[in-house]
Image 1 (cartoon, rainbow, N blue to C red):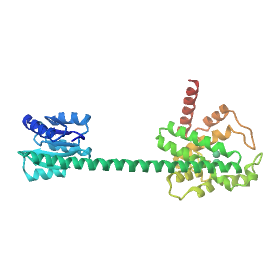
Image 2 (image 1 turned 180 degrees about the vertical axis):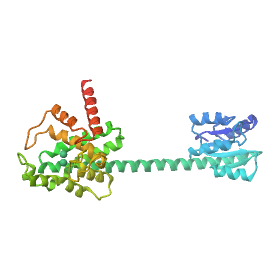
Image 3 (image 1 turned 120 degrees about the horizontal axis):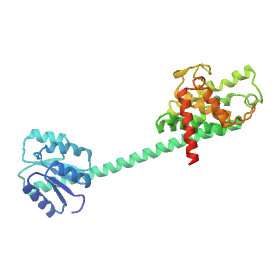
Image 4 (image 1 turned 90 degrees about the horizontal axis):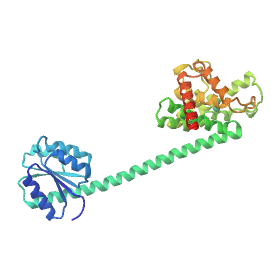
Length: 339
Ligand SMILES: [Fe+2]
Ligand SMILES: [Fe+2]
């Protein structure tokens, strides 16, 4: 008989050699351990189908080893013990033992118990293989969903380009620098990546703004400015309420990316921590990118001038912690480029 080996754990060398001989004759491979410590060492390096485990081991009870073996569902444990107390047998079975064999036993009792345990081990093994492939399928479809979402968002962002020429690449750059700032702030990569995915929709509300205003060269009139500022509310209305985590984050960002740390922003005049962190991060990324791009009403600033403006607005327009993270991310980027 081939297959995975069997481990016999018993402090009595005579019992160990009897069991090993019986199993070898029946075609099984068998390793032996005289105590729980030795058993753990062998279990760490070999994959056993069955563990035959004595209860009265030196130093500690075999029941302790049995409870540890619960972590290996494809290894079936049979307690082999001189203790024929039904209470102990019940405890062992409750702890996950597959069988309970009392000493002394006749050879066939052992072989039948081992055959049953090997069978159980094979069933568990195929079950865990099935579970693993089910998990892999779920992970693949989650990844597919995530990709579909990212793709949809990217296309929505690109659709905006037809309407507002400045928007297309701008939203992508803003989303990426928001991700970098989030990482610099110590947020997890998962959260930062979520911000990168939600970021491109921050100006989606501009879809409701007339081209005459969006593309107007020169200053906007107060009425036009009011209409322009509505893109935050419109974006929020468009994106909120789906229950989808990413879309809700995108809705929050759309709503709050023109709020200012000192309360002078729009649409609600929120201040400080009232502004969701995602909004505070995207504000910095958005302003910096907008300043360094040509707009119908002005030409692009140099990166140095834009950076100086961001620093000047630290604690006024922008959250100081976000500005600091932004500055650190620039230094890091320059160091990387210099290398
Ligand atoms: Fe905006
Ligand atoms: Fe923007």
